[in-house]
Length: 434
Image (cartoon, rainbow, N blue to C red; front, side):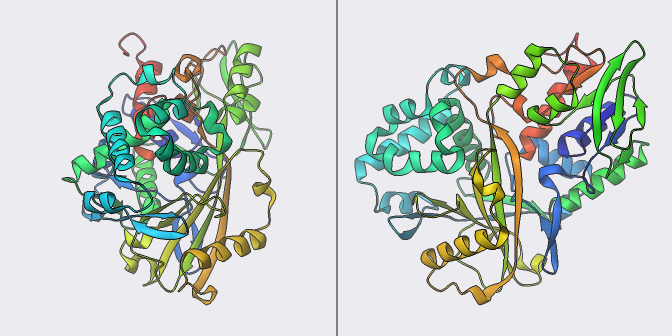
Protein backbone atom coordinates (compact mmCIF):
# COMPACT_ATOMS: atom_id res chain seq x y z
CA UNK A 1 0.00 0.00 0.00
CA UNK A 2 1.33 3.42 -0.95
CA UNK A 3 0.35 6.62 0.84
CA UNK A 4 1.06 9.96 -0.80
CA UNK A 5 1.59 12.58 1.89
CA UNK A 6 3.36 12.41 5.24
CA UNK A 7 1.18 14.74 7.26
CA UNK A 8 -0.79 13.65 10.33
CA UNK A 9 -3.42 12.16 8.00
CA UNK A 10 -0.94 10.07 6.02
CA UNK A 11 0.83 8.82 9.14
CA UNK A 12 -2.45 7.92 10.84
CA UNK A 13 -3.60 5.97 7.77
CA UNK A 14 -0.23 4.21 7.63
CA UNK A 15 -0.60 3.06 11.23
CA UNK A 16 -4.15 1.79 10.77
CA UNK A 17 -3.28 -0.09 7.59
CA UNK A 18 -0.05 -1.52 8.96
CA UNK A 19 -1.95 -2.83 11.99
CA UNK A 20 -3.94 -5.00 9.59
CA UNK A 21 -0.75 -6.68 8.42
CA UNK A 22 -0.18 -4.73 5.19
CA UNK A 23 3.18 -3.37 4.07
CA UNK A 24 2.98 0.42 3.81
CA UNK A 25 5.14 3.04 2.10
CA UNK A 26 4.69 6.76 2.82
CA UNK A 27 5.95 9.30 0.27
CA UNK A 28 6.31 12.92 1.42
CA UNK A 29 7.42 15.72 -0.92
CA UNK A 30 8.68 18.05 1.84
CA UNK A 31 11.99 17.46 3.60
CA UNK A 32 10.11 16.92 6.88
CA UNK A 33 6.99 15.07 7.94
CA UNK A 34 3.93 16.71 9.47
CA UNK A 35 2.31 18.86 6.78
CA UNK A 36 0.41 21.66 8.52
CA UNK A 37 1.67 20.28 11.84
CA UNK A 38 5.35 20.42 10.84
CA UNK A 39 7.92 22.49 12.73
CA UNK A 40 10.55 25.01 11.74
CA UNK A 41 13.36 27.06 13.22
CA UNK A 42 12.44 30.46 14.66
CA UNK A 43 15.45 32.22 16.07
CA UNK A 44 17.04 29.79 18.50
CA UNK A 45 13.94 27.60 19.00
CA UNK A 46 12.18 24.93 16.95
CA UNK A 47 8.39 24.88 17.17
CA UNK A 48 5.24 24.44 15.07
CA UNK A 49 4.97 26.51 11.86
CA UNK A 50 1.28 27.08 12.61
CA UNK A 51 -0.53 27.29 15.92
CA UNK A 52 -2.11 24.16 17.38
CA UNK A 53 -3.81 23.29 20.62
CA UNK A 54 -5.10 20.05 22.13
CA UNK A 55 -8.48 20.34 23.83
CA UNK A 56 -9.40 18.01 26.67
CA UNK A 57 -12.29 16.88 24.47
CA UNK A 58 -9.95 15.95 21.58
CA UNK A 59 -10.17 12.24 22.34
CA UNK A 60 -8.55 11.05 19.09
CA UNK A 61 -5.52 13.29 19.63
CA UNK A 62 -5.20 12.37 23.28
CA UNK A 63 -5.43 8.69 22.36
CA UNK A 64 -2.56 9.17 19.91
CA UNK A 65 -0.50 10.95 22.57
CA UNK A 66 -1.13 8.04 24.93
CA UNK A 67 -0.30 5.39 22.32
CA UNK A 68 3.02 7.16 21.67
CA UNK A 69 3.75 7.08 25.42
CA UNK A 70 3.83 10.86 25.62
CA UNK A 71 1.31 11.28 28.43
CA UNK A 72 3.98 12.59 30.78
CA UNK A 73 4.75 15.33 28.24
CA UNK A 74 1.11 16.44 27.94
CA UNK A 75 0.13 19.50 29.94
CA UNK A 76 -3.29 21.17 30.25
CA UNK A 77 -3.47 24.80 31.27
CA UNK A 78 -6.32 27.18 32.05
CA UNK A 79 -6.14 29.96 29.46
CA UNK A 80 -7.81 33.31 28.89
CA UNK A 81 -9.46 34.85 25.83
CA UNK A 82 -9.21 38.45 24.73
CA UNK A 83 -11.33 40.54 22.39
CA UNK A 84 -10.04 43.56 20.50
CA UNK A 85 -12.86 45.84 19.37
CA UNK A 86 -13.47 49.59 19.15
CA UNK A 87 -9.72 50.07 19.49
CA UNK A 88 -9.67 48.50 22.96
CA UNK A 89 -8.70 45.15 24.42
CA UNK A 90 -11.19 43.31 26.63
CA UNK A 91 -11.06 40.04 28.53
CA UNK A 92 -13.81 37.53 27.74
CA UNK A 93 -12.57 34.55 29.74
CA UNK A 94 -15.54 33.82 32.01
CA UNK A 95 -19.25 34.47 32.42
CA UNK A 96 -18.76 37.56 34.57
CA UNK A 97 -16.47 39.19 32.01
CA UNK A 98 -18.94 38.29 29.30
CA UNK A 99 -21.72 40.08 31.20
CA UNK A 100 -19.50 43.16 31.64
CA UNK A 101 -18.41 43.20 27.96
CA UNK A 102 -18.97 46.93 27.09
CA UNK A 103 -19.42 46.75 23.29
CA UNK A 104 -22.73 44.87 23.67
CA UNK A 105 -25.87 45.75 25.59
CA UNK A 106 -27.55 43.29 27.95
CA UNK A 107 -30.09 42.08 25.38
CA UNK A 108 -27.38 41.53 22.78
CA UNK A 109 -25.31 39.58 25.29
CA UNK A 110 -28.29 37.42 26.19
CA UNK A 111 -28.94 36.66 22.53
CA UNK A 112 -25.28 35.91 21.92
CA UNK A 113 -25.27 33.52 24.88
CA UNK A 114 -28.49 31.92 23.65
CA UNK A 115 -26.97 31.42 20.19
CA UNK A 116 -23.96 29.60 21.64
CA UNK A 117 -26.12 27.49 23.97
CA UNK A 118 -28.55 26.59 21.18
CA UNK A 119 -25.75 25.64 18.80
CA UNK A 120 -24.20 23.40 21.46
CA UNK A 121 -27.50 21.49 21.66
CA UNK A 122 -28.07 21.04 17.92
CA UNK A 123 -27.77 17.41 16.80
CA UNK A 124 -28.95 17.62 13.18
CA UNK A 125 -26.01 19.48 11.67
CA UNK A 126 -27.13 18.51 8.15
CA UNK A 127 -30.20 20.71 8.51
CA UNK A 128 -27.88 23.65 9.21
CA UNK A 129 -26.09 22.96 5.92
CA UNK A 130 -29.11 24.32 4.10
CA UNK A 131 -29.08 27.68 5.90
CA UNK A 132 -26.67 30.54 5.11
CA UNK A 133 -24.57 31.27 8.19
CA UNK A 134 -25.40 34.99 8.23
CA UNK A 135 -29.13 34.30 8.04
CA UNK A 136 -28.95 31.84 10.92
CA UNK A 137 -26.86 34.18 13.10
CA UNK A 138 -29.18 37.14 12.51
CA UNK A 139 -32.13 34.98 13.54
CA UNK A 140 -30.57 33.86 16.82
CA UNK A 141 -28.22 36.71 17.77
CA UNK A 142 -29.99 39.68 16.20
CA UNK A 143 -28.66 42.27 13.79
CA UNK A 144 -26.50 44.26 16.23
CA UNK A 145 -24.58 41.28 17.60
CA UNK A 146 -24.22 39.80 14.13
CA UNK A 147 -22.82 43.06 12.74
CA UNK A 148 -20.60 43.80 15.74
CA UNK A 149 -19.28 40.34 16.60
CA UNK A 150 -20.16 37.53 14.22
CA UNK A 151 -19.57 39.09 10.80
CA UNK A 152 -16.10 40.45 11.67
CA UNK A 153 -15.14 37.01 13.00
CA UNK A 154 -16.56 35.28 9.93
CA UNK A 155 -14.70 37.64 7.61
CA UNK A 156 -11.51 37.07 9.59
CA UNK A 157 -11.74 33.32 9.03
CA UNK A 158 -13.48 33.08 5.64
CA UNK A 159 -13.04 36.46 3.99
CA UNK A 160 -15.97 37.40 1.77
CA UNK A 161 -16.51 33.67 1.18
CA UNK A 162 -18.50 33.70 4.42
CA UNK A 163 -21.45 34.62 2.18
CA UNK A 164 -21.24 31.12 0.68
CA UNK A 165 -20.87 29.33 4.03
CA UNK A 166 -23.64 27.45 5.77
CA UNK A 167 -24.63 27.64 9.43
CA UNK A 168 -22.93 24.26 9.89
CA UNK A 169 -19.59 26.13 9.97
CA UNK A 170 -20.44 28.17 13.06
CA UNK A 171 -22.12 25.12 14.63
CA UNK A 172 -18.93 23.06 14.27
CA UNK A 173 -16.82 25.89 15.70
CA UNK A 174 -19.09 26.40 18.71
CA UNK A 175 -19.53 22.67 19.31
CA UNK A 176 -15.77 22.11 19.60
CA UNK A 177 -15.15 25.01 21.94
CA UNK A 178 -18.23 24.22 24.04
CA UNK A 179 -17.01 20.63 24.40
CA UNK A 180 -13.63 21.97 25.51
CA UNK A 181 -15.18 24.03 28.31
CA UNK A 182 -17.38 21.10 29.36
CA UNK A 183 -14.33 18.83 29.54
CA UNK A 184 -12.44 21.51 31.45
CA UNK A 185 -15.09 21.78 34.18
CA UNK A 186 -16.37 25.10 32.77
CA UNK A 187 -12.84 26.44 32.49
CA UNK A 188 -11.01 27.14 29.26
CA UNK A 189 -8.49 24.31 29.52
CA UNK A 190 -6.15 23.85 26.56
CA UNK A 191 -3.27 21.43 26.28
CA UNK A 192 0.04 20.89 24.49
CA UNK A 193 2.82 18.34 24.34
CA UNK A 194 6.28 19.39 25.42
CA UNK A 195 8.37 19.93 22.30
CA UNK A 196 5.30 20.76 20.20
CA UNK A 197 3.94 18.65 17.39
CA UNK A 198 7.46 17.94 16.21
CA UNK A 199 7.85 15.72 19.28
CA UNK A 200 4.61 13.89 18.42
CA UNK A 201 5.49 13.46 14.74
CA UNK A 202 9.03 12.26 15.43
CA UNK A 203 7.77 9.67 17.89
CA UNK A 204 4.96 8.68 15.50
CA UNK A 205 7.42 8.15 12.61
CA UNK A 206 9.81 6.24 14.87
CA UNK A 207 7.02 3.91 15.91
CA UNK A 208 5.88 3.37 12.32
CA UNK A 209 9.41 2.57 11.16
CA UNK A 210 9.73 0.08 14.03
CA UNK A 211 6.74 -1.70 12.51
CA UNK A 212 8.42 -1.73 9.09
CA UNK A 213 6.53 1.16 7.53
CA UNK A 214 8.79 2.70 4.87
CA UNK A 215 8.83 6.51 5.06
CA UNK A 216 10.50 8.69 2.42
CA UNK A 217 10.77 12.48 2.78
CA UNK A 218 11.98 14.84 0.06
CA UNK A 219 10.27 12.55 -2.44
CA UNK A 220 7.76 14.51 -4.55
CA UNK A 221 5.28 12.60 -6.67
CA UNK A 222 4.75 13.71 -10.26
CA UNK A 223 1.80 11.55 -11.24
CA UNK A 224 -0.46 8.75 -10.00
CA UNK A 225 -1.73 6.39 -12.67
CA UNK A 226 -3.25 2.93 -12.93
CA UNK A 227 -3.22 0.09 -15.44
CA UNK A 228 -3.97 -3.63 -15.53
CA UNK A 229 -1.18 -4.25 -13.04
CA UNK A 230 -2.58 -1.75 -10.53
CA UNK A 231 -1.61 1.76 -9.41
CA UNK A 232 1.66 3.32 -10.58
CA UNK A 233 3.27 6.24 -8.76
CA UNK A 234 5.71 8.25 -10.87
CA UNK A 235 8.19 10.20 -8.81
CA UNK A 236 9.60 13.59 -9.79
CA UNK A 237 12.90 11.79 -10.45
CA UNK A 238 11.20 9.81 -13.22
CA UNK A 239 11.27 6.54 -11.27
CA UNK A 240 8.09 4.48 -10.96
CA UNK A 241 6.75 2.64 -7.92
CA UNK A 242 3.98 0.03 -8.07
CA UNK A 243 1.51 -0.72 -5.30
CA UNK A 244 -1.58 -2.86 -4.90
CA UNK A 245 -3.42 0.25 -3.68
CA UNK A 246 -2.57 3.93 -3.32
CA UNK A 247 -4.11 6.59 -1.08
CA UNK A 248 -3.51 10.21 -2.07
CA UNK A 249 -3.87 12.65 0.85
CA UNK A 250 -3.19 15.82 -1.16
CA UNK A 251 -5.79 18.61 -1.05
CA UNK A 252 -8.27 18.62 -3.99
CA UNK A 253 -6.53 21.10 -6.36
CA UNK A 254 -3.23 19.25 -6.02
CA UNK A 255 -4.87 15.82 -6.11
CA UNK A 256 -6.54 16.76 -9.40
CA UNK A 257 -3.12 17.52 -10.93
CA UNK A 258 -1.54 14.36 -9.55
CA UNK A 259 -4.32 12.13 -10.94
CA UNK A 260 -4.95 13.10 -14.59
CA UNK A 261 -6.69 9.75 -15.10
CA UNK A 262 -9.73 10.86 -13.10
CA UNK A 263 -12.94 11.38 -15.02
CA UNK A 264 -13.87 14.91 -16.08
CA UNK A 265 -16.66 14.87 -13.48
CA UNK A 266 -14.22 13.95 -10.70
CA UNK A 267 -11.76 16.62 -11.81
CA UNK A 268 -14.50 19.27 -11.89
CA UNK A 269 -15.76 18.28 -8.46
CA UNK A 270 -12.28 18.59 -6.96
CA UNK A 271 -11.52 21.93 -8.59
CA UNK A 272 -14.90 23.42 -7.64
CA UNK A 273 -14.36 22.96 -3.90
CA UNK A 274 -13.65 26.44 -2.48
CA UNK A 275 -10.64 26.49 -0.19
CA UNK A 276 -9.24 29.02 2.23
CA UNK A 277 -5.52 29.55 2.69
CA UNK A 278 -3.39 31.12 5.37
CA UNK A 279 -0.47 33.51 5.66
CA UNK A 280 0.83 33.27 9.22
CA UNK A 281 3.61 35.23 10.87
CA UNK A 282 5.53 33.71 13.78
CA UNK A 283 7.21 36.06 16.23
CA UNK A 284 9.68 35.29 18.98
CA UNK A 285 9.51 38.14 21.51
CA UNK A 286 11.45 39.12 24.61
CA UNK A 287 8.29 40.18 26.44
CA UNK A 288 4.65 38.98 26.43
CA UNK A 289 2.00 41.03 24.67
CA UNK A 290 -0.75 40.23 27.18
CA UNK A 291 -2.24 37.40 29.26
CA UNK A 292 -4.51 35.93 26.56
CA UNK A 293 -3.88 32.78 24.56
CA UNK A 294 -6.33 33.89 21.86
CA UNK A 295 -7.30 37.47 21.15
CA UNK A 296 -10.16 37.75 18.66
CA UNK A 297 -10.18 40.86 16.48
CA UNK A 298 -13.18 42.65 15.00
CA UNK A 299 -11.42 45.78 13.74
CA UNK A 300 -11.15 45.80 9.91
CA UNK A 301 -7.95 47.86 9.85
CA UNK A 302 -5.92 45.18 11.68
CA UNK A 303 -4.14 43.15 8.98
CA UNK A 304 -4.24 39.79 10.78
CA UNK A 305 -7.08 37.56 11.93
CA UNK A 306 -6.18 37.12 15.59
CA UNK A 307 -3.31 37.18 18.04
CA UNK A 308 -2.32 33.72 19.26
CA UNK A 309 0.07 34.07 22.18
CA UNK A 310 1.27 30.50 22.49
CA UNK A 311 3.52 31.36 25.44
CA UNK A 312 0.36 32.13 27.44
CA UNK A 313 -0.34 28.39 27.15
CA UNK A 314 3.07 26.75 26.75
CA UNK A 315 5.73 27.04 29.46
CA UNK A 316 8.16 29.74 28.36
CA UNK A 317 11.03 27.38 29.15
CA UNK A 318 10.16 25.77 25.80
CA UNK A 319 11.13 29.08 24.19
CA UNK A 320 14.26 29.74 26.25
CA UNK A 321 12.30 32.14 28.44
CA UNK A 322 10.96 34.12 25.48
CA UNK A 323 7.43 34.45 24.07
CA UNK A 324 5.97 32.89 20.92
CA UNK A 325 3.18 34.70 19.07
CA UNK A 326 1.33 33.82 15.86
CA UNK A 327 -0.41 36.42 13.69
CA UNK A 328 -2.56 34.49 11.17
CA UNK A 329 -4.41 35.91 8.21
CA UNK A 330 -6.88 33.62 6.42
CA UNK A 331 -7.23 34.46 2.74
CA UNK A 332 -8.38 32.96 -0.55
CA UNK A 333 -5.73 31.00 -2.51
CA UNK A 334 -5.46 33.80 -5.09
CA UNK A 335 -5.05 36.60 -2.56
CA UNK A 336 -2.18 39.05 -3.27
CA UNK A 337 -0.92 38.51 0.28
CA UNK A 338 0.75 35.30 -0.89
CA UNK A 339 3.02 37.38 -3.12
CA UNK A 340 3.74 40.12 -0.59
CA UNK A 341 7.31 40.13 0.70
CA UNK A 342 8.14 39.11 4.24
CA UNK A 343 9.57 42.58 4.90
CA UNK A 344 6.32 44.25 3.83
CA UNK A 345 4.22 41.88 5.95
CA UNK A 346 6.53 42.46 8.90
CA UNK A 347 6.18 46.24 8.64
CA UNK A 348 2.37 46.14 8.44
CA UNK A 349 1.90 43.52 11.15
CA UNK A 350 4.26 45.14 13.64
CA UNK A 351 2.65 48.52 13.07
CA UNK A 352 -0.72 46.99 13.96
CA UNK A 353 0.72 45.36 17.07
CA UNK A 354 1.93 48.78 18.23
CA UNK A 355 -1.62 50.10 17.93
CA UNK A 356 -3.07 47.16 19.84
CA UNK A 357 -0.38 47.01 22.54
CA UNK A 358 1.13 50.46 23.30
CA UNK A 359 3.92 48.89 25.37
CA UNK A 360 5.09 46.74 22.44
CA UNK A 361 8.44 47.74 20.96
CA UNK A 362 9.97 46.46 17.75
CA UNK A 363 13.21 45.92 19.66
CA UNK A 364 11.42 43.08 21.49
CA UNK A 365 11.27 41.04 18.27
CA UNK A 366 13.97 38.38 18.30
CA UNK A 367 12.76 36.54 15.19
CA UNK A 368 10.03 36.95 12.56
CA UNK A 369 9.08 34.41 9.87
CA UNK A 370 6.11 34.05 7.52
CA UNK A 371 4.52 30.73 6.57
CA UNK A 372 2.19 30.47 3.59
CA UNK A 373 -0.18 27.67 2.57
CA UNK A 374 -2.72 28.28 -0.20
CA UNK A 375 -5.04 25.37 0.59
CA UNK A 376 -5.81 24.82 4.26
CA UNK A 377 -9.49 24.01 4.69
CA UNK A 378 -12.58 23.69 2.52
CA UNK A 379 -15.29 26.29 2.99
CA UNK A 380 -18.49 24.49 4.10
CA UNK A 381 -20.89 25.89 1.53
CA UNK A 382 -24.64 25.28 1.37
CA UNK A 383 -25.31 21.54 1.08
CA UNK A 384 -21.60 20.80 1.20
CA UNK A 385 -21.83 17.20 2.44
CA UNK A 386 -23.82 16.25 -0.67
CA UNK A 387 -20.85 17.18 -2.89
CA UNK A 388 -17.97 15.74 -0.89
CA UNK A 389 -15.66 13.60 -3.04
CA UNK A 390 -15.70 9.86 -2.47
CA UNK A 391 -12.70 8.07 -0.97
CA UNK A 392 -12.70 5.70 -3.95
CA UNK A 393 -11.81 7.15 -7.35
CA UNK A 394 -12.59 5.85 -10.83
CA UNK A 395 -8.96 4.73 -11.12
CA UNK A 396 -8.64 1.07 -10.01
CA UNK A 397 -6.85 0.78 -6.69
CA UNK A 398 -6.49 4.55 -6.24
CA UNK A 399 -8.16 6.32 -3.30
CA UNK A 400 -8.26 9.88 -2.08
CA UNK A 401 -8.49 11.10 1.52
CA UNK A 402 -8.09 14.79 2.36
CA UNK A 403 -9.41 17.68 4.43
CA UNK A 404 -12.31 18.34 2.04
CA UNK A 405 -13.94 15.19 3.46
CA UNK A 406 -14.32 16.68 6.93
CA UNK A 407 -18.00 17.53 6.74
CA UNK A 408 -19.20 18.10 10.30
CA UNK A 409 -16.20 19.64 12.02
CA UNK A 410 -13.48 22.23 11.70
CA UNK A 411 -9.99 21.38 10.46
CA UNK A 412 -7.73 20.37 13.35
CA UNK A 413 -5.58 17.40 14.27
CA UNK A 414 -8.40 15.67 16.15
CA UNK A 415 -10.76 15.85 13.16
CA UNK A 416 -7.93 14.69 10.90
CA UNK A 417 -7.38 11.58 13.01
CA UNK A 418 -11.13 10.94 12.99
CA UNK A 419 -11.15 11.28 9.20
CA UNK A 420 -8.33 8.72 8.96
CA UNK A 421 -10.37 6.20 10.94
CA UNK A 422 -13.48 6.71 8.80
CA UNK A 423 -11.54 6.48 5.55
CA UNK A 424 -9.65 3.39 6.73
CA UNK A 425 -12.90 1.59 7.51
CA UNK A 426 -14.36 2.47 4.11
CA UNK A 427 -11.25 1.62 2.08
CA UNK A 428 -10.08 -1.51 3.87
CA UNK A 429 -13.38 -2.92 5.12
CA UNK A 430 -16.09 -1.47 2.84
CA UNK A 431 -18.65 -4.15 3.74
CA UNK A 432 -18.68 -3.29 7.42
CA UNK A 433 -18.03 0.46 7.20
CA UNK A 434 -20.84 2.63 8.48
